[in-house]
Amino acid sequence: MTESSPVLGTEPAAHGPRASGAGGRIARGLAANIGGMGVTLVIQLVSVPVLLAAWGVPTYGEWLVLSAVPTYVALSDLSFSSVAGNSMVMLEAAGKRRDAVILGRRLWSIVTVMTGIAVLAAVAIALVFGGALGGGAAIRPSEAQIVLVALFTQVAIGNQYGVLDAWYRAAGRYPLGTTLRQLGRLLEFGALMGTVLLGGRPSAAAIAFLVGSATGFGVSWVVLRRAVPWSTFRPERPHLQTFRELLAPGVAFMAFPIGNALSVQGMTIVVGGTLGVGAVVVFSTTRTLTRVALQAIGSINNAIWPELSRSVAGDRLDEARAILRRSVQLALVGSLSLVIVLALVGPSIIRWWTYGVVNPPLELLYILLLVMIGYSVWSTCSSVLLATNRHRRLAGVYLGGTAVALLAAVPLSSVFGLAGAAVALLAIDAAMVLYVFPAALRVVEDRPSEFVRALLDLRGAVQLAISSVRSMA
Image (cartoon, rainbow, N blue to C red; front, side, top):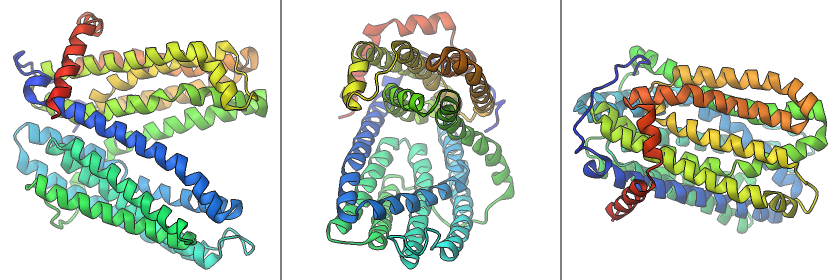
């Protein structure tokens, strides 16, 4: 679990993704993640018009404010589930199932206690400040309290999903766990929408959302107990030593959402401060279009994550190399294809999307497309560092690089306009590629020349993809 974990030895070439079944699991995990993207799209497209039509602008606006507050409770697990999940996968792959079970039980105890404390504090705040929207608000103070309490509890259930995910990953059932989580999201959303369409107020909608979440979690828990009989949730006193071991890598994980916030919101503030609000609209709209590939890249990374943990810990570095090479290859093919399309029709899409209000400079669009390519490389390469809990230096480099880029964006945007701000973003991803590429190859004991040669082997990638899809059946 430490940053300085020794790099494991090599394994005979017979142990490839196809031979071990990793290819099929990755393909199923990728399919589950793509399904999750579809679920997110449905939720985004349906929720806004339904809630606006049912409640009106004032009530819907206040609902958005209230529903944004509980999301901070989700941070109360300090990414312990991700870190412990990695360790559980590696312990199971190394033949140490008993240690994986013990860690899983301790993880559940720690996350439950931490989340419980956060929820109790949040509920107390909600009961005291439930009327913070004011006496003339569309959602009455008493109703706002109910909404907050229900949503705080729902977020706590979301943290418990992280524990379930750790068990699913440890048992090689990540695709199943992800599929059940997406079905749970649909259940939550269906309960919320059904209540609203039947005339329910925000308080009733929040309670229905909570009930849907609890039901989905219950189903996922029951399936886990059947699919992974050695999983257990027996109460156990949280161990301080385990807490300490999880704390540093867990906090390091949190550097990534913080860095993302600095990159997105921070750069928006810089552009607004140096070039004005009109430039913010152009910059943000263009950047939003070029970031559409991020979700797809995230789907790839999440699918290969548990398999990289398993192959590295199981001393199958040839398998880890194959997974990393093909994943970077897939991410590059996808991002380059999107770059070509957006370079040709991106300006037209933006003009159509904004009813002709935004007409982005071509240099801004092209630089942001380069940012997307750089991100696809380093983000996918970093999966092997994240999957083996070797990400603390990576987190520091990313957070520090983002902060430096923000500072550099001020003079760059003042001199070169929007293109200067985009160059600052490109500098972040260029620096990340320079750091992550050799660090990732060291973990899987790969050579840069062989890695690049494998990226150019499109025929092998197609054959592997076909065999992986066949193994899904």
